Length: 390
Image (cartoon, rainbow, N blue to C red; front, side):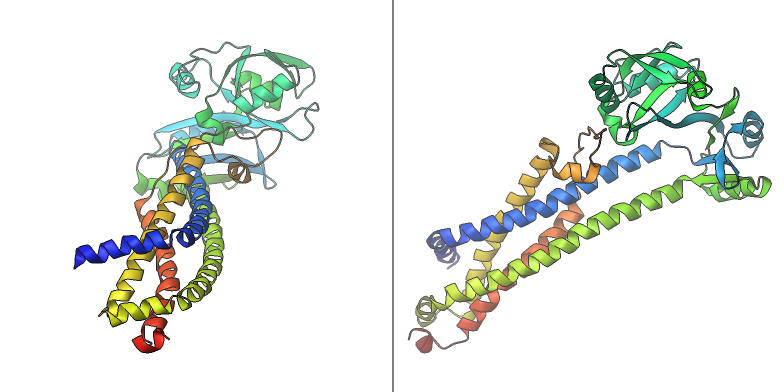
């Protein structure tokens, strides 16, 4: 009995192949659009949190009148004495605007070229292509390198010092594309050179990074800093993670909301389409009923038929989206998320797959898709066999 049932199922699929092909194509396009958006969001979210995990637990910066100002070494040494803080590092960074590039600015980041771990850091940032930086050299991101090249800065760049005058720096290397998401507009140069450009006095920093390995001490250390120093701001990595999570949840929610609206419209179209097709096939249903097929048999037949078409459409759209995002780097759609401008983000989307999300999307799609077919079939099946054959 089972063999004849599935044989008849295959015959039914073959007979209605043209009708199923149009339905399959429409459903696959719908799944492709949704899955592409979720893949892009998921990949960006994963990379963002991987980058955030490498950041210090706290960043402390000095305020004056509610605005950040330079931080001196005295505060750095004082923070180092707090119990539970294992490492304190002064950082020099800031925005640099060149009159040549009217709508584009660069993020200058100063690095200590005499730091023992600098070689390891540079090898990591440049994919093992660069290990040493001299006082007159700097590293730039691929986007910055391309923008400078377009403006005839092939091998060196001319900075304008804050106090006046210019400073020439050689472009020694390029930061790896894997860091494009957080370092797309970055210029890495020796710390003293960065101070000259940004106008920071010797021995001062933009902010101070604190490493706290014990998570149980984070709240205590944060309260200690705020209670001792009234004119400082403490940036907590946990709050940054929560903001990022909210932002990506909102982006995913927008896609799911749009998908739900479009899916409901697609299901209504499918429902009326199947109602019209099945009304012309009432005689076939009547013949099957007269041959001894029960309502459950007919519903099972159409249920398997719909499940086959829906599953193929879902997997086709899902696989196409996977290739589009991770194989082709999501042209057009990626620009929507990464943005346009003088410094477009040249980012390779890293594969992201969540089995739970896959199952939820499948159920969200296949249940209304199947209902749009099963309901019209059931309405015809409850009609008597004689009436259906009229």
